[in-house]
Length: 412
Image (cartoon, rainbow, N blue to C red; front, side, top):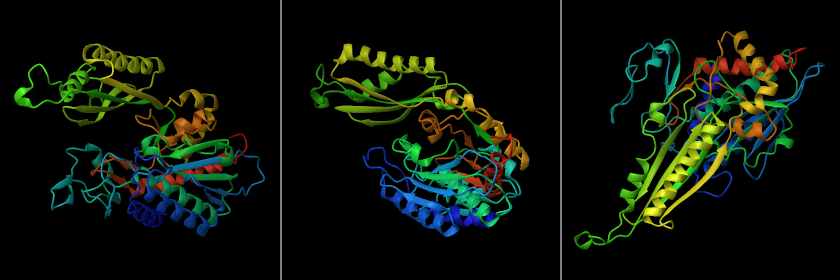
């Protein structure tokens, strides 16, 4: 498994698949099509059946049942796009065998070092094979490690027909990082009763709670006048935007919160004196608190509109996804099965809330309950991203074990 996982992940991360929220196409970028077509070829090569790629960039495939036991159809999903937070172009993955602790020099030219001083969890990976960036891009293990693990698990099951399992469906989807992953996903065509996204982080993560999530864009309009003659004439949109942002609770930001704490995140600010835009994401596990956060930002905008003119302070806000716990709790046994699968392969499950989003959040509300399991990666979305290949092997083993457990009497 290990060599296959390395080979697959190395191939996948070198394809630039960053999504683009400003694009109206699906997938939002051409690089995603490149990887999707490659995955179709690979699925056919390993012997998967009913391999399809539709016009919206959704790959689906089937591993038929090989047991007489009645078992529900289960699915495994991963997304092909990578985050927009940091460049994913010209990724040059580096492989470090038998990490012995201490600093990892990612790039001598620009002085980028992955250090346990900054990332103490590195000490847990002594003896592991790590795949890292070269310090100039993200890696893309989110979610290409998940793709590699699903592909390798399916290949393993095909090569080991003595392992009994029910019908399995797999899917690879676009544009998860911009919140549009499942928007055009055909749940009925997929035909699974339950599914798992393989889109988590460190070893043992098992998640069935996500934020309630919204995005907001606040536009502040000003009036530019030559600074030499600007008195009582200039209206500085950039300064209005700064003042508006300061009205939000300073401690309720990602850098100050964890666990079940929600936040307002200013993801970008762009503009000048004439016009400035603030882009936010709003997150909270509690639905009532989530609505309060949205109302707070809206009320601040309305207040500023009274001061500067309602046409000069504008807000666009839209919900992105909701906490999937509500949809998964009635079928909580699918979480229990994943937890048992982890224990069976020597992994201690850690049930934690997802401080982010997965396609499973939206899919669960579309009628496909979909918790999330780990991939083995750390520090997603940036130059310090890395993944343990050892833990990728464990994730692959968990997928295989989940398939077996669903085919055993009294499990499903």
